[in-house]
Length: 270
Image (tube, rainbow, N blue to C red; front, side, top):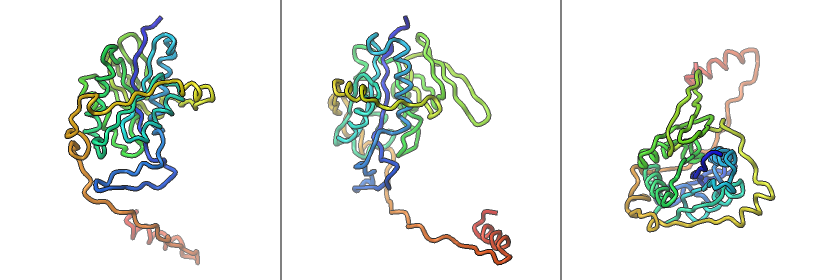
């Protein structure tokens, strides 16, 4: 029997791509009224669930903890994770977190992970390859640096054997296999698996699972180090994108090819 794992999966509540995105407030933060669990984080959650299930699942003592940071609505990302199979959820929420950039976010999440590692240490932290709103891919690397852990980014396959993990990273023309010791931080791509859908049994079971709410005071973070005050970057201006204009229509009167070339040349596309 393999050793059990305690895995934390970072899950983010992001604006639904079906709707237009809007900025709000003086800090030009994203309006998250119509938000869902980030699709890319579902791959990380599925990877964690598969690792846990291969070792006997929750009955054998494996833990898959879904951790989300955000305002009150972010708890919905945790609930969806529980429906998919996570064993427990954690919601880090505090008004001082509003406006946090990647650096401030990684600081708060690192403190939350340390807090969750009290008693039983965390073996693995999994994330998606990026958030579908910011799309920076910065948090996993910053998180590993703050925690002093090995990091593997953009893993398209992942196995754990004892105290070591093995991951494959795929580039355009080659693949590489890398290894790291546990505990570690790993971001996974959307090629690693096919995330499961919550079924009726999972939805009912999720209602009995616990969600812990943490504040900055709980994890020992000074509010001045997060939010707008603690961020390394800031948005100084933003404006709505201009409405789409009608395209150029070329009617073929025997010279359409020439006119098309002239148009492309004028747009500096040739």
